[in-house]
Length: 119
Image 1 (tube, rainbow, N blue to C red):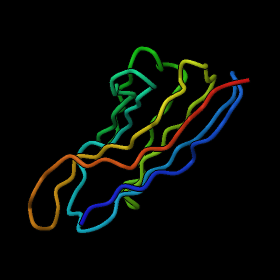
Image 2: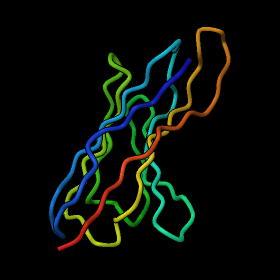
Image 3: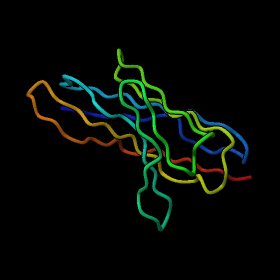
Image 4: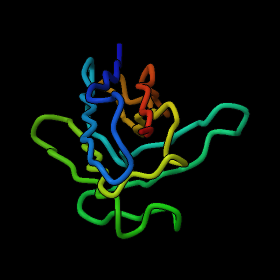
C-alpha cells in the first residue's frame, strides 16, 4: 500500500532555512501531483504548493521564499524553505495524487512534520 514518509522538520530561527523531504512508496504506477500543505495551531490546513512533472505553483504567502522540487525517479518531493517567518510555524504535510498498480487513483498524505520558527 502507498506510504508517504516525510523528514526534515525542526526548530529554526527567523530568517533561517529548512528543507523537507517526502518519499512515496508502495504499489505506485504513476504520480500526478505532489506537494505540501500545512496546518498551524487553531487553523485549517492550507496549501503551500503543488508540482506536476515540472511546474510548481505556490500560495501567495510563500512565493519567493519556498521552492518545491521533485525527483521523479525516486518518487520524492522536496520543500526548500528560506527566509522563514514565525507565521510559517505549522505541521507540514506531504501530499500526492497517485495511480497505483491496481489502477486506482487517490489522494495520499504523509504523517506530518513539525516546523517551528522561533528565536
